[in-house]
Image (cartoon, rainbow, N blue to C red; front, side):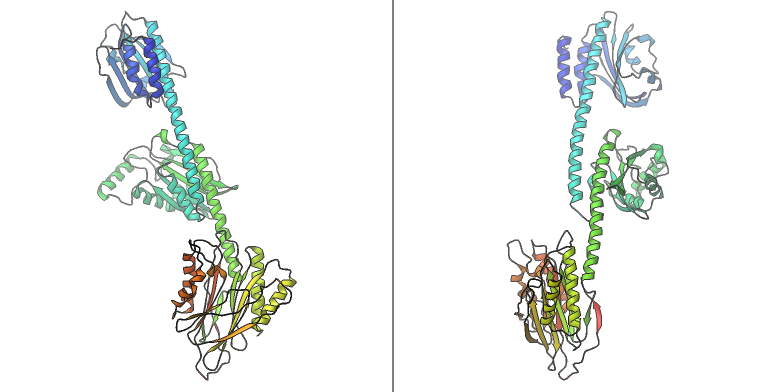
Length: 620
């Protein structure tokens, strides 16, 4: 029994409303004070979805501590006429005049003969309405009762509005956090397909139960990624994304439409997402007999039994469409994302995908240009084993200035050259092409290494090149005793290494001024003999300057690592050293170029005229 005055009860009701997370939590603070009003015998409230779907009814009678609660979802068509407008409506109706067809409260009210039903109907939100009423006898002050009902309804409506507002603010905060995380995740990869897969994974289950992502190609939408909270549904979504004609037609119709579209109910008829009774029963039968099978239809039957809704958002960046993202929902309408959020997510996804696409185009262009700056093939005879390796170190993919080549010479010798232009980019690429082709032409004509480097230096000075470069040229000339004469000339480049057949490693001691710095420069050559099985290794400073986290350079362990490769062919040595340096470095982004020549030797007294040449493709 509540002894407080109505004013105190109303104050307590407002306090409860400020803390409530659900309107139903106010029931005790509403029903008991109303029931304590003189002349009131019954308090009853109803909650309706749409005009005529009764969701529940709650009643409390005088002298009882336990309310009668009827939870239902039945249709009451005649109740549609009771639906209020925007403002609450208070009505007095004799209980004897209530029609059961439109008043589910009538059965409870008739237990009080001669009573009057005073009821206030009001709208809570766009999805439905509610009523709060009391059964009174002749002793009641009906006007006072009406006033109390109106005040109680004001608190209920304010409470519901506050709950919705707090929910929106919480959801907005969660959406903002999700969008921020999505941007970080998507921007952390420059691979197109990985970016698309991340778009799908980020959205499930936070945004939807399933997602499909398509990339727009010249021939139409191309499926790239799909995910779902259910493994079996994910496999089904992947199949739908690749092969389903209904979805393909939908995406084609969408074209460049920027607005997100939601589809549900009859709009999904004929689609793999349609919620038909037959499809649901078939899916349930399949799941019961086959377990986690591959044939489940996404959204057709789930534990929550919510109808399937899909949304399609166009991914547009820099005034062009790059793809689309389709979300599959199996959740209440209240938990569906709004279009503004989906547009924001689509915009961020589109920019990340577009950046990845632009990066991919640039990477292909750079690699194509890099290929034209390097030889596509290396010459091979039975006298030497040649191989090369090239590793791009710059994550921004500017064209590097490293180059190499192997040039057969008229006297039967072979010239090896390797160099490095200072810097990266278009200017470095231009100098790279000039340096490699100049040296190749001169060496093919039989020019000695020192003269070839001097003439290249002169050409650079005449062209007023703004960058310098380093290079080393080594010739291998077969000798009658089965050895080869190694003649090396360097212009400020790291010294080549020689791996002897017995496993020892030595450095070819030679030096010279950088190319492109002074006008008149001459270069001296160093000569030594190498025997069968010996290997000459030329490289750029990207190999030696790879640095580990502790600060040590790969140069310090290069001789040991090279010695460990004794007995291997040139291809294995080149690739192994490149990968070891790449794995070793924690810092440093320079390109790595290697040119490896293993001398196989010639029998003593053999003809030393030039041998027939064949070409083998070089590794890049």
